[in-house]
Length: 129
Image 1: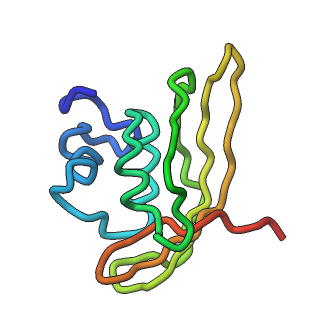
Image 2: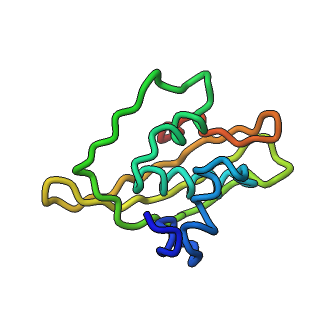
Image 3: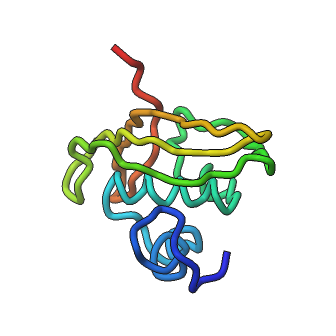
């Protein structure tokens, strides 16, 4: 994705100034929500290495194969709980809209994040009540 393109996370910033800096390793996401946004953008640009690097070691898969036919279209942040720069845990509820095989769909999830050694990690999906 071109650095001057609109960032897929829909922050309103250019990709090069937004999520690309996290993907390149130039900076760490300061909040759980920003990590969620950068991980969504990594799905859009198919950056499996970043997704694995930001996945907590206790739940991280050994490998990640991203489907090239999956077209991620939009990210809506529904809510956040905690996950700020001084927190050690947080949750982000989101909807990620996609197209796959000519069909439109939405992935709705509440993700758990943990902060260790001043870095945020995706932990897992919070099970519905």
